Image 1 (cartoon, rainbow, N blue to C red):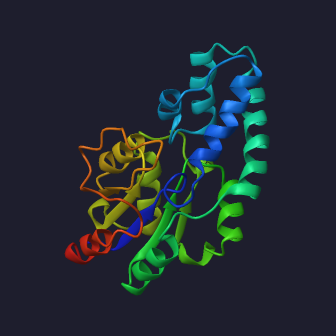
Image 2: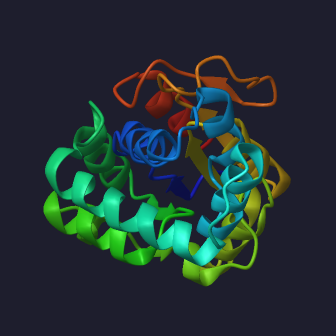
Length: 217
């Protein structure tokens, strides 16, 4: 029985993956390097230092991880404040799930300050009973730690939880934690392998999400 719906954030709730891509492309171009979508796929869902390490190694960057990450966060925050917007159907889905008497939670590899910027900007904080961010875990996705942490905070069993994800790393983290998982691909992840998903849908406004929740309730 599904008692909680757990949302990933980047690329799922908000169109932030395009902003990360823009940020990392700026950094790479500045150094005479090419930042590809394939490289971005490897970095998705991981903690900030894990992902910047992949970028550093793949592109042969000389700066320290700390320096690169500080630069990325500064560029990204400026873009976030100017350009971020919710994915179509987000608000309606949150309202419907809440009306179905299900808990809502958020589990993201992003830093808490970025989460707070977005939730406050679009007045969504009140929806979530539990929020787990990068600061609360040691390992990023595809490790299941982030979903195990939010499940524990909700005091539920994994098979009581449905995760909504947009990337393969996130899907693997959710399934390895023992949860149901519906994938909502975006422009950066639509070519990834989602064969382990319980369902793949076209967007947060896809009615099959609610149908799945009702069927499993």
